[in-house]
Length: 555
Ligand code: ARG
Image (cartoon, rainbow, N blue to C red):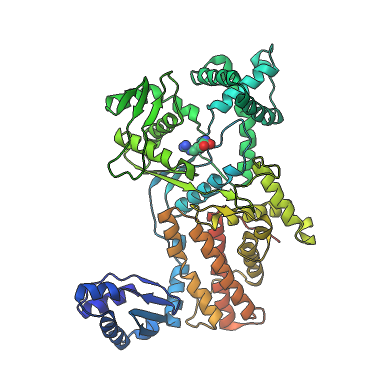
């Protein structure tokens, strides 16, 4: 349709690359008249009249249009013909990747990033499910993605837990210390509180952390034990959420790169000594805010969070040669990543594209970051269990649900609640609302799919040229949007385009279902409806997978 419009513009003497967009007043519209009016010094309406007249004279008009008309102050409204809709849909059904644009880049995605030795909490939810969804989407369109969890495995919390173990097992050979998850879960908060009370304990924990970073063999024995116990639990929860990593590297792995990387940075002339600390200036002329230098080594020799991220970029560049590295963290790290990326670019250690996406918080009913009733941080597992309880208590039948189905629904509730929001924004996670089968929820989309799935059968029918009703027409037009939706999500790295489209598609499909008695039909109508609904379900299933949501067999 765009090509057709362009040729008409051209035949009238207007050079134009048109973009036909969705419209509220018609099926589609063309908004180019204002732009052309400026270039050609005519009124938008004058140009519009010429164009509309010409289009209405085309011999193949009905292959595309039902009507093309001009609306003031200068829009061309387009209603497409049934033939056009059927042609396009037949075409789309046969395309790979739901008609999305193919890409073929190598992309590292860094998400998850939990700090080992403490349990996952609500704050870890978004990076995991947004990051995994971006990964799924980029892979779907053909990219070679590599996911890396980038564990916080060598920070102060490790020193604190080791300090706790030293207190609890004073005379034990480290080899013989047996740790449990409960022990770890208790020790970290206890030590963290102690450090707030006692400057001396805090210093000791910092010293232990430093020795650990210098690979003290004794501490490494304990470190490995902590890693084993803690990671087993972290993996269990990620598995539950279908969050997967190709690499389980941690900050400690980046430390192995420093002996090469730091001399390299120095050789590049970007490092400056400041009071004994090694820093890289990353301020730029057009900065609207102050961008402080990136500190890579403190005067006491200690490395920082930024050093480990630079070491990781160094390692990824060398080992994977990615075109892009994508980071998904909360938006309080926006400035931090600006510093790190600039330091990496300034030193020319990585020539690909570095992208950071910062998301907002998950809030409770009070619109403040989600907390437990007594104000503590909510463990991720407790949140999952609360959602499960809410859904089970919703209806009597839910109590007998298969465990696997229930887990898939819990995933759908949590992920759809989250991913329907542009991740830059905070959102309120209202467990009750998002568990309902009605409304903009995961269960609603799942239910719509299952209900349609029951009435259609496998078929190889080819769509005819007839559209049977308004609701049929609406569903087909909605389905035609899918390729653009995926392209948009890929381009902006934003899964919410897909989640919102999925919801709209479900509403449109439900409307179709309610207005067309499919069970009593036969012949062409039945064949065509099976194609349309079959494709609707293929699209739904595929897009759900991109969000990390899997279909239950029953609900
Ligand atoms: N462990 C970090 C934290 O808890 C998040 C890691 C994010 N990823 C990264 N490459 N820095 O804040």
